[in-house]
Length: 431
Ligand code: IMP
Image 1 (spheres, rainbow, N blue to C red):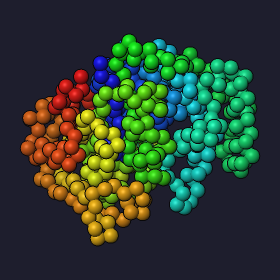
Image 2: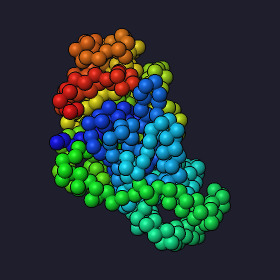
Image 3: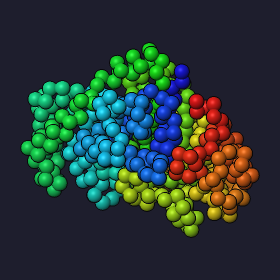
Image 4: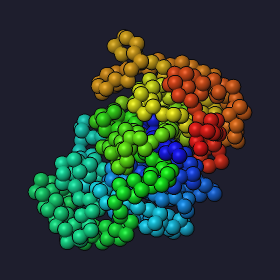
């Protein structure tokens, strides 16, 4: 039995949700291991679009158990809203189908307030976060001040923990306007009520997953954000606050390294990024606008326009060193249909020298100039292609160049948002 991990290979929004949704029915468990409601997966089927934030993508499959792992930070208000939204569309989210680790940390109203307050300041310190309190919640976790779902097994204890933290925060951040709208009484009342509603879903997921593994159940680990937003390996400090590459799975899901046998790297045929931070292949011209329009490149979570650019193979090779993906899934190839030529970044020029490594230092990344290899475009609509062989030669040449550079097969190609608009090239890698 193979357990599979899916992670983003760029700066997020690659289309992980679509791939996980397609694969989910083959798995007994779908497990989220990091991030929070900063994530935004879009899944389209039956002509309807569903936006997922914290719920794992297995939620659409009746027999799949969905786990929100200990490494996720959960905003109880946002999660309840997401559950209600799903239920209103006929997707049932029972405690049997959605389970939350009792070690997961809770995002409380003050985390979001601190996040937005920092981001509203002027100057260089802004990251362009989603303003959802993700960073502060992870800060509180690392500084051992966090409040976890297990604290709410005893609501009296939960209230005490929140009161203590709130009082400490008020002393430091007392002048924040938004905090005045959240006096302690409101934080306690609303947070206790929301958390209490989620408690039927709360379990010790370490034992659940250990038993599941012992029974040979299949698991799909679903990453949020992506490798270049990873707090250790991304373009720090313009990153999210968790380990969003595959290296985050064991700590964030509570499974040993041997629990993952196969991995899929999700990568757009071009590159996008939301928020601030270096982006060597960003396009500020008409081509960038064409990609944004054709690809509907606006954030699922915040609606912000995404920055667009060519596919960066230097960055992707670096990402492959970290994740060792068994296969790449190339998403949104159809978005490039109208382009007369397409480009791949195969190196950088840094201070006059050619390099093929993705630098750690931000100022170096800011200065690099991409070296491109240009390919003729296919200029044919791809959205009805269902077999790899049926792709135009120009598209196959483009994908072959990616494979050669990265040393990883392209096993799946997506040519549209619907589940059906998917080409499985190496079907064995997805069984
Ligand atoms: P945070 O995760 O809200 O703290 O934001 C940190 C950075 O990660 C910002 O640049 C966000 O735009 C980016 N980010 C967070 N979640 C996502 C996502 O799901 N897709 C793309 N970018 C994201």
